Length: 339
Image 1 (tube, rainbow, N blue to C red):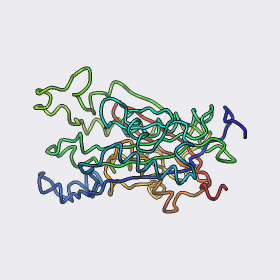
Image 2: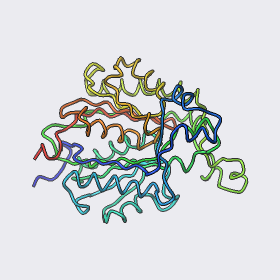
Image 3: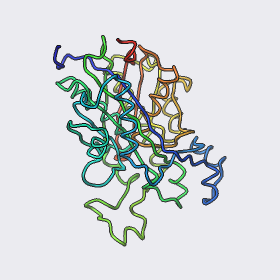
Image 4: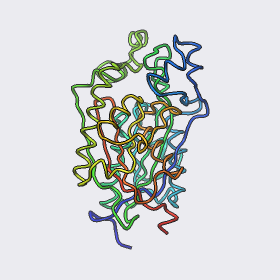
């Protein structure tokens, strides 16, 4: 068998998702917050989201999605040569979340985490492609979050936005007759670190009774500034990635934006001149699941038949940092079809 190398064609050969068991609707939130279903939906496009129970964590959701992805690729755990977990809600500060996930799956390969917030899955996907092209035939990529753990339940500005979930993919070399990963664009505007983040728990502001009392371990967000920067960042990143692939927005069959807010999605799609009929939106059912957002949207559209082999997919994430990450993909044949 030819060993993977710099000329290897790579493709997603397996995928899986995982969601917690508890659904939290807007009406549920309105019982403890000064809000209504209509108010939330009009401003965000969200109707419900999933919250993890006490026995559900970032690692357990990741393992569930990853197990499905490995099986769908027709592989076994010992076929995986590397695992990358994208998350901004790690199982704990140390060790990395991948250690817990790998143990649950029975992996013996190396693993590491990536924290690029809501851009994390696309970052991890592009790293996986590089690894697969250079000697690791099957790389497992997981985006998993329990955002409900870091949201102030009494803050109406953020409590209505976020949800929990996970999505996973196996990136394999020599998996397709053509290259599925056409181009990418990765970026970070560090001048925007103050507009979205969690202040406490790091070296700059260690956790203490004072930070607990002030709520600094919860997400803080300047919504208007995030909106303004996010739309521009998405548009510019998508345009750069398409240019690198010698494509235009007219060549895009499906646009998979990070599911943060319907107003950001519609504004970005409009500026890119991509119709909403070609834009995948599941924000209404899942809320903002950070690094799990893009895989949940992408694989839902694959499973329901919208995305078909040969389709050009433009996936773009944006998140705290302010990070951006765009991948231009040509969706491959499924594992069964390719065999």
